[in-house]
Image 1 (spheres, one colour):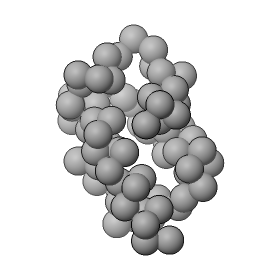
Image 2 (cartoon, one colour):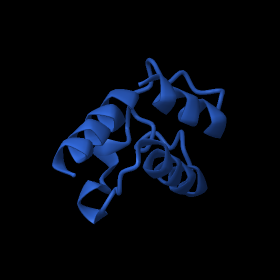
Image 3 (cartoon, helix red, strand yellow):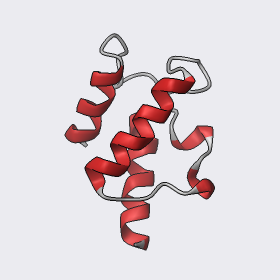
Image 4 (spheres, rainbow, N blue to C red):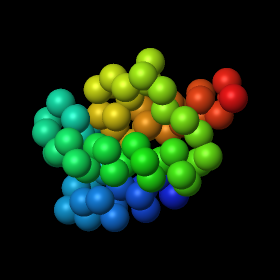
Length: 76
């Protein structure tokens, strides 16, 4: 999960990712940040985040993203 936190902190170091649970719904990340985030996650974890994973709840918190990453890795 440390690598995911590093990716997020590169995008916006001013967000407390350990406590924030509404990164998307709370508009903490804008659309460009989200695109960058998805690209960086795919590259770092060698996964493909397909359309079925493109839901706010999968990106609202670090825990949700980490769970999504692990699930995708298990499926591939």
